Image (cartoon, rainbow, N blue to C red; front, top):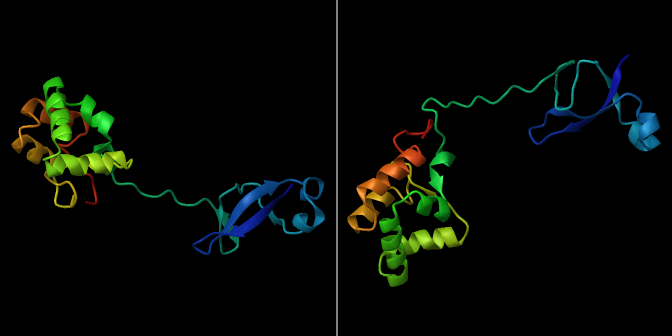
Length: 162
């Protein structure tokens, strides 16, 4: 027994199976049921037409050579604050209250807007490249906090394709 499928064209121009139904006439209005076409029983939702056959879409290749992704190295304020020492949290809050450190002000603006901060010191990180080094230079972060952040956010590894 063959099955019927509703085919749609995706944004890349591929014909893709969006719905499969054994008997569209029973489940859909006649004008919609007429749009269904026969497909092999092996076809599934999401399959793409390749000539006269239906094939599963190839899985995207994700290279995780170093086992870390950029998204795991970004932090919202609560995660950042949890991973620094209590003494450094006190110094950071004092810097926020003082308002004289531009880097702290920028971090607060980013975090207040719901953003994240990429903590890796890498040339591709144009916005906050030296954030931890600069906070240490301003006597806000200690080596212990930097070590905790490095471990928590895998900052000793560079994500692939960067």
